[in-house]
Image (cartoon, rainbow, N blue to C red):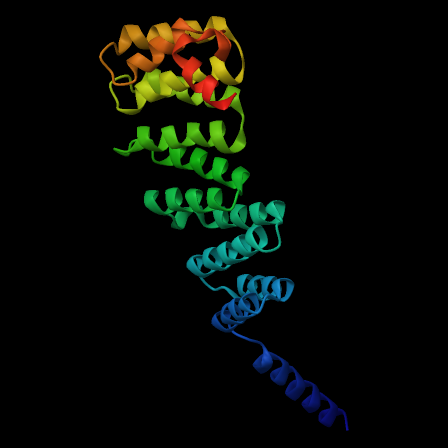
Length: 236
């Protein structure tokens, strides 16, 4: 009798194991449930796929699927950020291009905390890459336009100006510092400093006329700028 009970337990265990879905099956099921708008069930399938993953590539793909679903359909940015952050457990499997692309994917679903972390890791790991200044400029833009941390944006823009003064991004970064101070922080003194530095460093740059215009009317209201009067008259 005892042997029979053990045999039954073994058979049931084998049946349970055989009934479990594979990684690919869970991933496919998650996509199907997402298409049918059963989003919570879809997320559960993607989480099962994460647990079933045997390779870094599989874990990354399943976490991205779960993150995108959380952001786009469940409107849960915190959970989306958590899934994207989980992809960094396999950081050693990323190339420079992979990590940059992943940061952009995170930004696309507003997983901003993850994107910031990914850019920081990229700059720490791949700072010798030929496109490092371009990636650093993207990082500054994330702080400026996505995270809305203006002080951090100014800091990273400033590093670009100091470290890569002859780059294509340096004038844009310097202009952005002046613009943030003038138009977003309302601090005219540092705005004047950085706009003046722009004119001195890049007098023939295509943005120089815009900087000169900003300097000329710094702190003025729209009504005090003659060049804009015709625009105001059209809206009144």
